[in-house]
Length: 400
Image 1: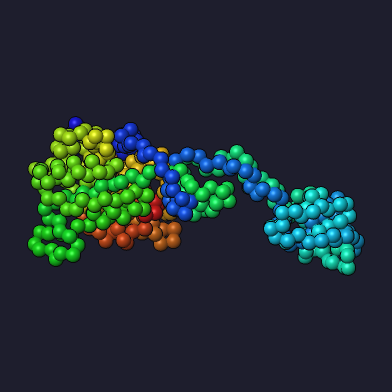
Image 2: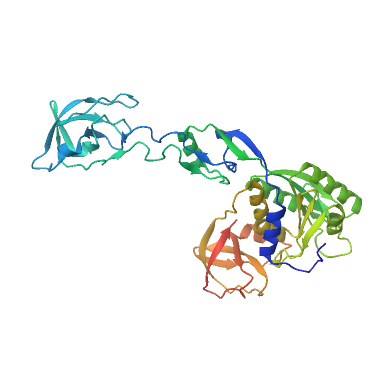
């Protein structure tokens, strides 16, 4: 068992999390239910997309050689032999010096290798005057231009976006092999905690972290399971942990990670399983616990809400990504420090910041307060090798 305050670097904590992360199995869902799910196996194109060469303009399917030299003074004169309708499977054939009208998206007839835009053509009886020459392939989408049969379109581990679902529809994929969603158990500890609907008495505070963790779990594609508020007593806490481990794929326990006489979380984890780390060189979040019970990862989070949420972003994201075979994806924006951001070398800091244009204003509120969680737009990460940032420094901000 690691000793509290025997701090390990964040990079080492990330490696521990990757090693203890159990990979979730595969399940199949309908395409309409695949949003924000992680692809379990690569998706490939079973056919050429598009399956035919089509026009990207309203105009006339032509042989490009028939338009060579065409211009306003001397247009190319072609015989129009018909019109291709949207959805027509047989568009016919275009012989030399012939053309056929095609709307945007329609099949290009055999023999044609370009489309002349309607803006640069004029019908005159049975003929069409083309006032601008076109090159082979101009104004066309060729068969297989999008994807060719056998192409790997999406790799395993991709978190599927609305755009991805649209492409899968184009590929004819109606059922999607995805990674099973991890069930995340949530335990909040503390004799001082009460439910949100209750009125706090002296020394009491409403439970924040249950709902903080619940919202986090949903945004990360996991299924939250709440076990309620557990008092700082060995029996109830051990019972709650045993139940959560038996029913969930990973467990987050908020509170009870700090060193103190009433801290039993690390002791219970050590008795029931293994404590891999109790103390991370991370601010806020130093007293974080990483453990396993029956191969189920357990994160002991600080009780202070801001600290707990920073740990979830910094370390929880790594664990969930490893369990689902995906990569940690974060939305970042370039910014400029509007004030100095101090930090101690050897410690990785996550500073809450408010963005005003490109300026990032650090918010140094106490981690036990919740106001900076809503006043901030994201986090400024200060690597452990830096002693902070000076005013005006160019940085990246991780958006919430």
